[in-house]
Image 1 (cartoon, rainbow, N blue to C red):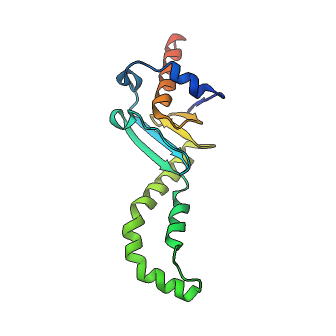
Image 2 (cartoon, rainbow, N blue to C red; image 1 turned 90 degrees about the horizontal axis):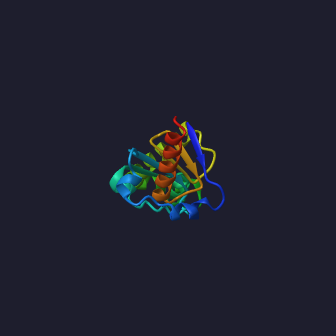
Image 3 (cartoon, rainbow, N blue to C red; image 1 turned 90 degrees about the vertical axis):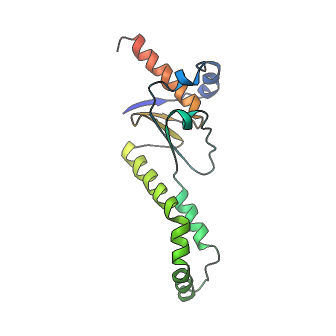
Length: 152
């Protein structure tokens, strides 16, 4: 896996070098995965229209647990009875989010991500410290151009 790390302040400089067309920006990019927590705003830009985009909130399981525990009685017996009565509703409400969160955690482990936010492009290139997907695509294109310029 090729790692593209951002230096301090590189995010602002990337905007000055934005590739003119979003079509060129996403050329060769088919898949984008973003790993962040719920406090990190994600700017998807044109990614959703140009690629297969998946956003994983790595703290979502904890947030779901907190939501489920709201209003649960303090005693263990009462809590168990409450959860048994609510089980079907809980499953309907949270099943998709739990599956998405589990997939995100599995993918993050498979990619061996060391921190968040992280953007993974084409299941191969990792960019840390960025939540603007258009800027991540620009950095990816700059890296590709540098590799081609080096004759690689």
